[in-house]
Amino acid sequence: MARFGDGLIFAAAVAAILWWVWRRFRHWLYEPPSSRLRRLARDGAPDEDDEAAALLREHGYEALSGKHRIPLGVSVDDGPYEATRLYFDYIASKEERYYLVKLERPRQPMDWTASGIRERLLVYALLFPECEGVIVADIRDRTVRTVKFKIEEGKE
Image (cartoon, rainbow, N blue to C red; front, side, top):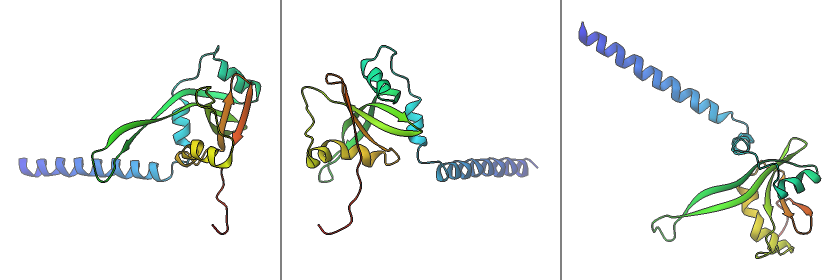
C-alpha cells in the first residue's frame, strides 16, 4: 500500500507542476506588450525636485520612473560573453502612451541628422517596440523633442 501512496503523491506533484507551467505559459502568451514597460515604470518614481522630471511635466509628460539599466551580453566570434549595459534615463507617459527618455548631455551632443539619430536612438525603439517614441530632453535649453521611427517601404 505504501508504494501505491508514493506513486499517487508523485503523480499529484507532477500534475501540479504541469498545471503551474501551463498557467505561466498562458500568462506569458497573452500578456499585453506594454506590460514590460509597466513593470519597469513601477521600479521607482523620480524625486519631486528632479529637474528633468519637472521639464517633462512642463511639456505634458509624466515621468513614471528613472535611471534604468538593461544588462546585455556581447560575444564576438563565438567567444565568451562580456557584460555591458544599455542605459536610459526615464520612462514617461502622455495620454496613455509610453515613451523612453534620454537626457542630452553636454559631453555627448546629439547629432540631429537622420543617421545620427538612428545610431543613437534606434536601439531603444527596437528594444521597446511598444513605446510610442523616444524623447530627447535637454535640461539646459529646456527643450523636449520626440523621435519616432518607421520602416520605409521601397527600394534601397
